[in-house]
Image 1 (cartoon, rainbow, N blue to C red):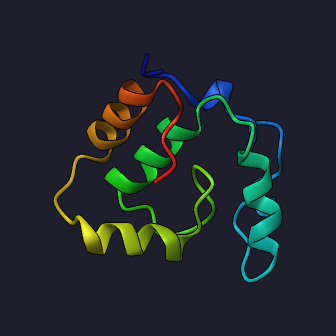
Image 2: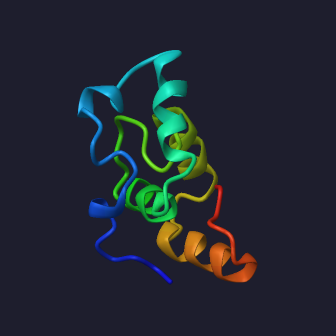
Length: 94
């Protein structure tokens, strides 16, 4: 099931934004917040579909998201990730 209003359920909702919009090795700490997030897939789809350039979203850095966008520039990431999750029953990891 896709969660439309996912932000209030995000594991990072209580984090300071400065902790998610970091560079270098600090990004690995920010990504750890996402590992147990129940709406990680929705968050990642939001960032990919809207080409958000900064911060960690859905457990991926800007660089990781750019690589996905280069491989599938016209994809509807919500559909891709939702279909992947539906077919496996497990949240998609892009």
